Amino acid sequence: MAKMRKEYNPDHVRQRKRRSVIYIICEGKETEINYFRHFRTRRCLVDVVPISSKHTAAEHLVKHARALISHADYFPQDGDQIWCVFDCDENSDAALRNAAGFAKQNGYRIAYSNPCFEYWYLLHFVKQTGYLKDADEVVHLLQGRGWLEKYAKNLDVFQKLLPYQSKAIQRAKERIEQLSRDDVAILSRGSNPVTTVHDLVEYLNKQNV
Image 1 (spheres, one colour):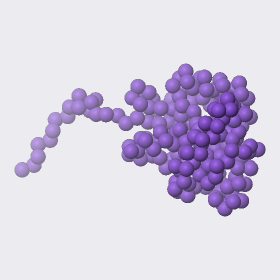
Image 2 (image 1 turned 180 degrees about the vertical axis):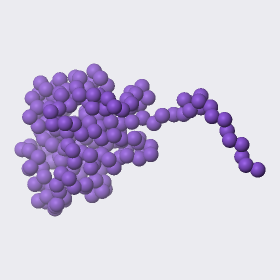
Image 3 (image 1 turned 90 degrees about the vertical axis):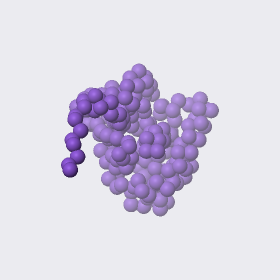
Image 4 (image 1 turned 60 degrees about the horizontal axis):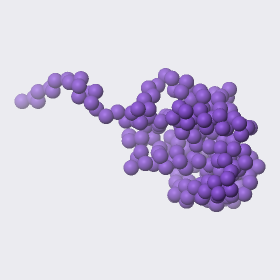
């Protein structure tokens, strides 16, 4: 005898727990996307959204973050989060402060790197606290010391980095502690080198526990 079909109950549908979504708004169209897409799982819904070139300044990126996902549902009351991922680039200290202020006001989180996102990669292999001129210098270190010899922005290096992730998190925290002791603002030009990408990585890891 065939099983009787259960009657549809809209109340049960409404009561079903909705999984939260983490929106990652980033400058890069390759590097950050290649990296953060690996955190997408059935438990962790991650939507990586690259921004257009006209919004690359930190302040504009943060202020346009919500508009960039306007086509999507965003329910912070249900645990949805927006993370703005950007580098120091040509941003002034005032622009960085404004970005931080706007993010705080709207409940967004920031993952900031100075001088570049690849500094987060570098910390997987070495405790680098000395000044880094630009992204080219960071990439040169990654390639020249044999850690990521063929590194390019379109190359997916997540699996190569994964075994050293906990060490990178530790080094990133130690650098922030050092800057804090020296009374240097993290979101500033003077914090070189620094990254807070580990905050986002730890958050994403917790979603998958």
